[in-house]
Image (cartoon, rainbow, N blue to C red):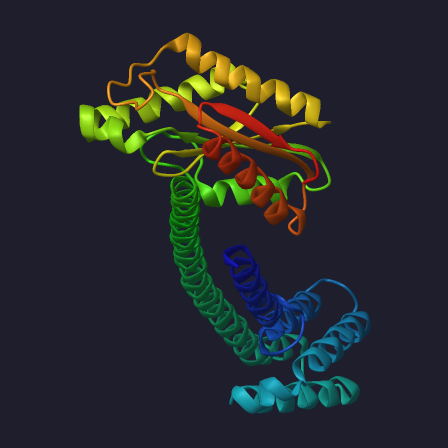
Length: 350
């Protein structure tokens, strides 16, 4: 926009300058009179020289008559008659001399002397035209200077405004980028469990929809007798156990699964699973990995360490199939709990 405004200003100034130049320096109008008066004066001075020369009288009169006629034609213009009071008398004097040359009613010296008045008039016209041309040039120079200042300061103002708009645009762009980044960060935090750093229930649903038509396995994990663990060790130690189990589940599944904490002591894992045999292997690895870790649980009713109940199901990812798969894995989990916990089951027909 600033560049367009600058171009419009330059075009406007150019359209102003051209007619001004034409008006001041063209070969038409009142200022051209200086050239006509100069040439007419030269012709009359030549006529004087011819009248005072040594050539034959008839030849001198003929030559002088021709020069006077030429001077008359150059002086007999409307602008001279209108603006210079000496023009009309000078033209009449030239008419009178031309008539006297025909009748030989004036001698050559008197004729030469009579030409001084028209020459003086033409000299006055010439000088006046020069003064007018000088004044016009001065006016043009002053106008040009003023327009140049307008162009310079306007261009500077447009440039500064362009910089200001650019700065405002960049600031707004940075604000927008920052707001967008903050929104992304908020969304990311909203889909993360603040205690363990893994995904939450919303993230699980989002990730399933992001992998539509792929064969996935869903594993639900519940910590057995977690309330008794908290009662024995306290909630801070219980939070530590939750973080340790989140790390253990990820490592046991070879970091191939996406992990989620669904709330309390419930976890979920989502992984690529071409068949139920693969999912069973993952569930078995999870139980065995926890047993090898040997987390103590002093309040476990069966005098064991920390144990897990695990249920799983395979499904083809889709918004319609996910609720059924979740329900199937949850039923498998509760069958494990009903059978005494510390085990796993996979639903075959999820």
